[in-house]
Length: 174
Image 1 (spheres, rainbow, N blue to C red):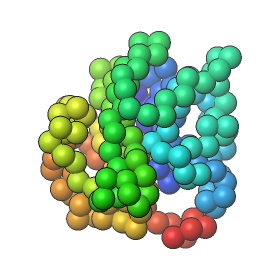
Image 2: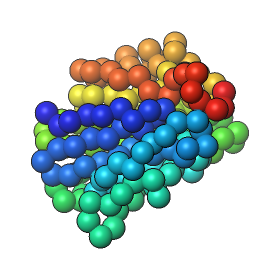
Image 3: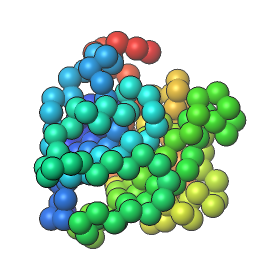
Image 4: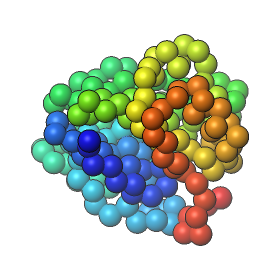
């Protein structure tokens, strides 16, 4: 099983045989210190400072491979699929788009929902596919509510659920 490290807010670091991935690194402006994690690959769900601080991640090689949108990517044996979703319930009209990532690492399928703002459609569920470990925002506000998070969990039926993007006293924004 790959090593999973929660780095705060919506940021996780996955380390497996084929590579190290950091998802949604954040800026210190949010009130937390990311440190300087190392990685081969960085995924960015959307272009907000609390999810796109690529400069805060040290490359394991010459350069980081940055993924910031939908599509299929294979980097050093790691397969990553980005699925277009939205950061709100009105197809991005209020807060823009969001990309959900499925990451195949050491025979485990991780799914990072970023700042998902709605329940998933059937085509999105099919594109995401089978999930072993789900990183899901649960704080409401600019993401799905806890009740909606329960519905998304039921939609994807992961083996393990890890809550992310929840309020703490350290955050400098609501």
